[in-house]
Amino acid sequence: MTNNSTGDLAQHLRAEARDAPESGIVEVMNYGRKRGGVMPLWAGEGETPTPTFITDAATRALAAGETFYTWQRGIPELRNALARYHTAQFGRDFVPEEFYVTGSGMQAIQIALAMVAGAGDDVVIPTPAWPNAAAATGVIGARAVSVPMSFGNRGWVLDFERLSAAIGAKTRAIFIVSPSNPTGWTATREELSHLLDLSRKHGLWIIADETYSRFWWGEGPRAPSFYDVMQPDDRVLFVNTFSKNWAMTGWRIGWIGSHPSLGQVIENLVQYSTSGVAQFMQRAGVAALEHGESFVAHQIARVRESRDIISKALVDTGRCRFVPPDGAFYAFFAVEGESDSKKLAFRLVDEAKIGLAPGSAFGVGSEGFVRLCFARSPDQIKIAAARLTENLAR
Image (cartoon, helix red, strand yellow):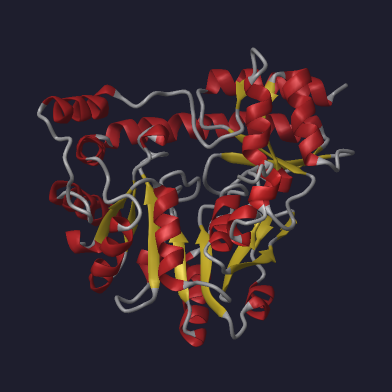
């Protein structure tokens, strides 16, 4: 047998798998986890564990023996609950056949991408953006085409002329996260309509990641949505997750929203990846949707307070380029005199005992910025703000 090193073996893998980038966020997380006393604001989650009304539903399902293969599209009870949830959120009727349960929001993204793009195709992604979508695009052999957003006194702005110029003969989809991770940019109804017009003109799909729609700091109970402006036959795939609203990041359960005519395709792709989400986990999802509104409201209220605390602290430093976000729960800011975001993130772990994500992880136009997740209690964000401002004042 030939004694190959792991480096040599890697050369025999598919280039798309071998060259998948290391997550710049995880790199800092792994560094910080080895050090004590670091407040972990690098990932998109808070410190609140999943509430008991959700975990108890999973426990009861386990005790009842719900540990067998189950519906590939999701158990009927969860798909019905998703339809009722959307009906309440959007004020119009939805049917269960529009929803498909996935093993995380990330799997929802992977399936949606695999449905519309492949080798030699392009997917347009405004940046800064959560890196996983671009990386998943590369793994399937397609190319992620970055469209850098502009940053100024109004915050982050999507340049539609630049976006239109990025669309070519190989473009198959536009990937939109609104409210945005990491910038907090949130598309208006007019911007969503403009995006739909572009997709119709060029025959493109829109993959709409509306994970943070409830964490919206403007008027109304949620952010504007493609659901508000689209027609039934528009080419829109929605990807979403239970992670943020209901403090379920570790559960890895999400969903796809689509026209019912796509159901068999989605079922097939679920079958050939995970063969469905564990039934006891889906029972937890039902409980979250049916009994979780007061919990979600509490989450939103405290995150709003934490947003105000960190926003004032960053502005008061006099060193940060920052505009309070319109949505989501991240402060994405640059520090005067700090051009290397990864170096800054490592330094803040060591010196300030706070863990932030480097802007370099979020694509074109992101270098020099860092991301701070403020989805934590106001008391903890006060501590984080004090640590950060003290360090930046040195």
